[in-house]
Image (tube, rainbow, N blue to C red; front, side, top):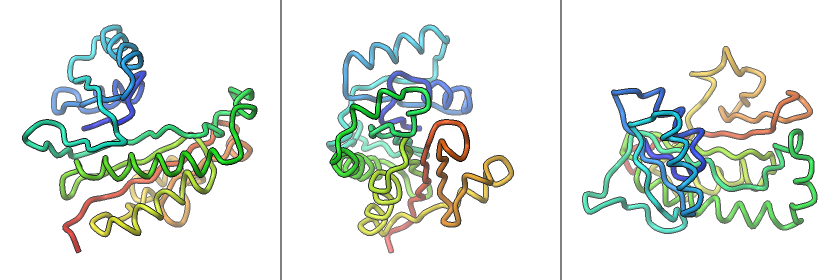
Length: 196
């Protein structure tokens, strides 16, 4: 597995616990200071099946000469974080009018680079802690319009019993703070297939 925007490590350590001795997680981030936090969390939790790498997901993610392919890739992308207003109301003063569109362009670039390292039959999960259309559905729609070798996976198949009220008819996940009382969050899973 590859966690593209991994620091400070909460998702990577959870993935490592899920795969146990049967798998390995590569956790990457662009910022050295965030990688130090990630390494510290791995040590604190005693996690040994995670490799930490510095990577810039706005550029090619071909990791190593063998051009490694992953079974699963997670992109929890930088976003406006408007879904976290419940816990962090001060965020509303930091977000500028053009931030959703600006960040959506960055998210799409990261997703496109991450798509290159997913093996055929593997999955690419995209998530953001926001609800703006450009950063959620907009990114997924633009991605699928250019990447014909990917299809949208229907999350209702795997998660309907637990998250029914958040799973939409298109199979993507969207929780809204005013409906759930929790943080707002969006997720979609994309599966790589043979080129059409």
